[in-house]
Length: 378
Ligand SMILES: [Zn+2]
Ligand SMILES: [Zn+2]
Image (cartoon, rainbow, N blue to C red; front, side):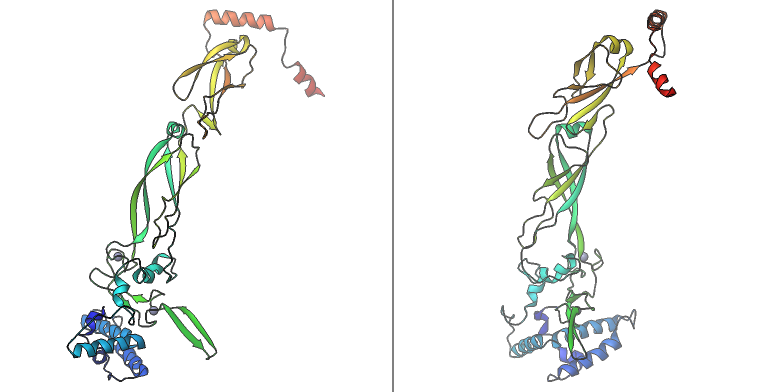
């Protein structure tokens, strides 16, 4: 509905009232006609549906003193052979309501749709919402850092109806119950006046007659964007990275929100992570543990480094290889923590068996359980 239609429509005739009808007469006429022609009471009767729409439109204009005056003025101008659009500031300019501009009007009326049902009428810039996202990296990617592409979906106005909720080519009409204010005042016993969101339009101030088929009248849609984001080297599993200004766009010139990316790092088959350090378990032979040895140790870059094991190294001892861990923010690196695991041979060839038997003979005088057994007897 727009004032341009007004010139061709006789709202008084639609409601069956005189041009001088009082507000009460108009209200009464509307109620009766709306009841008689309500689509709920006459399902499938398209003629009644059309009548109901006309009645609602007529009432939405004539029930508001301000708009009725404007309408009367338009009609009289038309009758005199000249039709003008309302000047800005003269009454309510409906074209403002539906332009979808950021200057107020439309976005204010529909702001309620995207604001947990609250109707916002301020034209203040609003910062976009923060958005949470997640990205999965391999162990190596987390260590080296990587640029990832992320698809982000956020709430947006339905593209098909520009958020009006009304089918393409139609417009929502101003709610007749609250006259577009979205608020209803009810007085109780004449003492207390309560103002609450209009029940007819749920506070939107507008009623959709012909719902958009894409969003089913909600006006809500989803916008998807792809953003590139640099994940710094050395991120840990579960770490949250804040990307300033990559969240939902602001409204009415407000700044964008931030994007928080939670990083998921896949486990590595041999390396573990302990803060900035990497961990690895390396098997060694008994003789290497007993006599000492230089052993090859894998690093995460694929390079093999040499680690010196001293004589008499017990099972489970951890050695530190400096600078072979995860990158830190300052450019340095953590360490590689190497834990040795002494292996017991499961198969011995003749030479090895002879040697181990010789070792047994040589060690026979030493019983490692003497102290344990004596303490157990206490
Ligand atoms: Zn309403
Ligand atoms: Zn829609």
